[in-house]
Image (tube, rainbow, N blue to C red; front, side):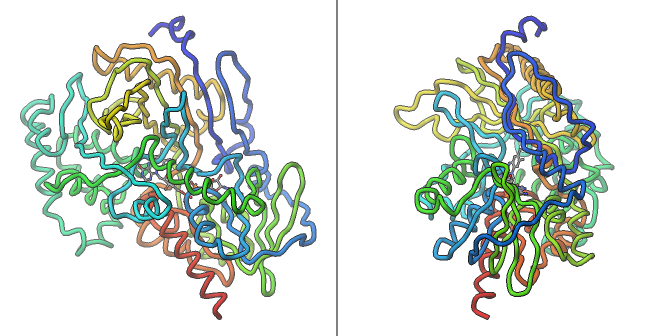
Length: 495
Ligand SMILES: Cc1cc2nc3c(=O)[nH]c(=O)nc-3n(C[C@H](O)[C@H](O)[C@H](O)COP(=O)(O)OP(=O)(O)OC[C@H]3O[C@@H](n4cnc5c(N)ncnc54)[C@H](O)[C@@H]3O)c2cc1C
């Protein structure tokens, strides 16, 4: 694509780098440019927290039974379960949902992050409880590589990969070896190993495929990934069991939207968005929470607090953390992870739900309305493709400038258009949703050692968020962690 053609496409940059909390302030210059919309920059306070700024702590103005910090799926679930208590939910952004957040283009939903869950999971169950039915995906993942579209990659697809026969054979031997591993028996041992130990003896194209799949799903390439997480994933991808994935248009952001729609009419006065928590201090018999909202700083008190924020933020605002627990929180790593949505006004690609593209600037692309495409009367107005574009931690600064985001989105578009001749179509809009630290990275030991040490409940402060669960960053994990936080609170009350 030439620069002049690119100039006619509207780029929309959204999302918060809050994420951004532990970023170098010197990187924050953001020159505005034309033809790009920007939205949602709320990291000033976070940076002050990072820099150890001593905020004024006003006296307690209000008391609640419990305060939930963070309005992602974990915090919203906690609030949903705490409706019979006098709760307060505080969220930094001006919208609810955190990483499980959907946006719309002319009424059509698309994901800015979380895509699907599994039938019977905690996410599927919660969805049903709040009146949503997640729909079956019923498909197998293809790969596009060297210009070839290979159906059902890890089953019949291995015979059709556009590589020399020796490489295809290596893929098959690798699959057989991985299938033979007893994950249950070797659970802890596998989590302490890097997956590269298992790929090194095989064709490098195998590692290239996992250097695509890993960053998309758990933020890490093969050499940094827990072998447990990868082996479990490949055993699922290559098993002969039916696909159990479920979702809705726009992904699991549909769940947080529904939670917010249920909670807000009844509890609006106890749900503050645009409210950044800057300190959580245990006191005798209660906890004090100081937050900033609309330029005002307030301190509120509660019998207990559920921290549904990611640990890189939690460790900076919770006082009195034991040193070992703070060290465990500091060990968790987070991947920068923008998502680029390509919006076409005609069908361009509808052949599979999730398609893998090794060796490109994005890892995979999802058809936004896949699960409703065959419903009677449904007509696709726009073909929206969600391109997952995880970055290496060293590339985080690319998201800080509007130019960096626009460039990234243009590269994704160019890579997409070059995948196959029929993809060389201009989109009507390109949206990039940037997030600086949205996904904790499933490195060796994160699941079995670091997370259990990081989530130990304090006397009155309990830790939710998906990074209290694992093995990888999952909506279901965020919900399980919220339920556990609520149980701890109920035990505290019963004491
Ligand atoms: C690109 C991408 C794709 C994904 N795909 C999938 C998928 O297909 N399936 C799946 O199950 N999972 C997926 N995930 C993971 C899933 O999105 C997360 O596990 C889940 O959304 C985490 O929810 P959470 O509530 O634990 O955390 P978060 O979503 O991080 O929510 C934390 C909230 O706390 C708020 N906050 C932070 N600091 C403060 C503060 N100081 N004061 C007040 N509020 C604060 C944040 O703004 C945020 O809203 C994906 C993630 C990403 C990034």
